[in-house]
Length: 366
Image (cartoon, rainbow, N blue to C red):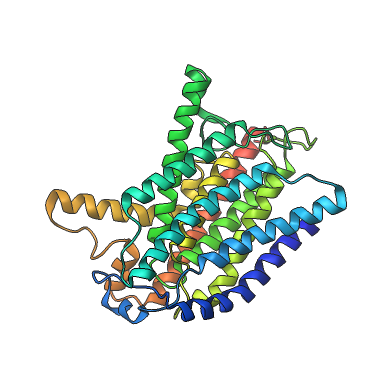
């Protein structure tokens, strides 16, 4: 528990202290946000707002977990978790792609990005490396960092092992690439209003913190009653998830409307990568659809808008992603953000109820 508190406090301090320092640095470098011309015209006033805030979020999460790991190593000699490092690698690697994207936009002084091909290649390389390492890396607990299959909660309902290890690895690499691409894009689309992605990510990762903590308390071989989970180092996953939630909480102080800094793709892609990795590491890839329900809605609204327009040349929404639709209906930006946070909170609570209900059912308590 002390290690968890240390991680949370360090993450909060790094975010609270580091964000204003980053704001000053970005101002000096003139790396402000460049708003797309086809978006809501009310957003044009945000042009020039400092971006790259994701740098502080990533740093806060890493420092929080590292401080916790060092404390545990000094007190009990506990080895550093390679599984935790792998999850952080997923976050940081996606964050690097986002940083390159943000840097390109800032340097060109317009809303031009890293090319689609460049981003796809980068995501493919990093996601593939993560997937392979997750299957082969030795873990402290003896349980693998990932399962070669698709899971709702814990046990795969579809295993990739049906055609041998090599085929299973290939299919798992494809699956991880899909998850990384889907969640990074979903979080990136959500990051369209002041504080929207930050606040919803805070709620989502707090939910995953609860899930990972429950798995750590009911870890297979730990001797607790009820269903046990074969998850690698869930306590480290708990610390990372809660450090992410706290980092978003601290960043929200500066990112709430009117934002004095944006997280940029550096933050949204990193948080999306972390969310995907958390779902894989906790064996809850399909439960994540509920836990990250707001992200799913945002991404689907964009897909529906584009697909329907290509078929009929008509629009389903006034503008996509869907948060812009409600803005154009007359909702204030603050109202949209708070109500969307409430929606995400409902999704997380439903996800936790489903997760606990699954544990109760598997434990034979009903």
